[in-house]
Length: 190
Image 1 (cartoon, one colour):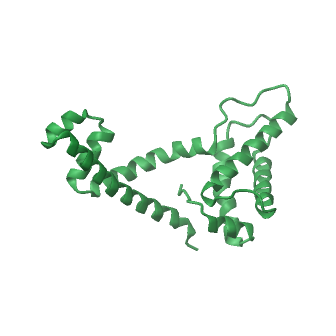
Image 2: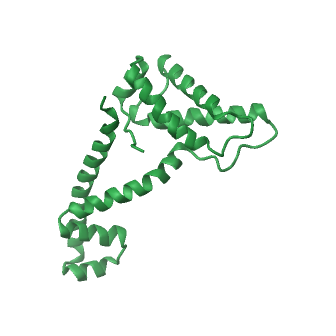
Image 3: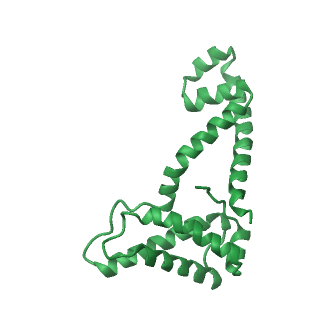
């Protein structure tokens, strides 16, 4: 699954009724919400009804001038509305029972899905970095080797390790953000 980076422009287009944006919104969140709701809804509560209610409330919230204020938080906004819808339905259908404790947020589901993709992306980025930078980052963050041992292996002073880690992290972050931006833009192509 391609993950989408929401922004203010996306929310503006959705609020104004841009057809492509509305279709993207429904396709994208239909998948995520179904994963979230799978096995977590009580018998008698239909996932399709919940999802349609979430979509309706999101669009009504946006078009009434409310809703999300920062486009980057749009996913959390949808997740919050979904939680409210499920809670309301659980209370109205069976008021005496408690909501399932295993109810996960979209963020939890995304974390599980992203883990493997992120690990692969990190490996690709490290493999493409200068060897010394990659070695420093692997030792400090992936292998969690003692810093004195890292310094001994590299033949450097402990104070210089901070400099190497800082520089390597800056290079890594730039590459990671670039790769994230590329994957986030992929679904935008019409």
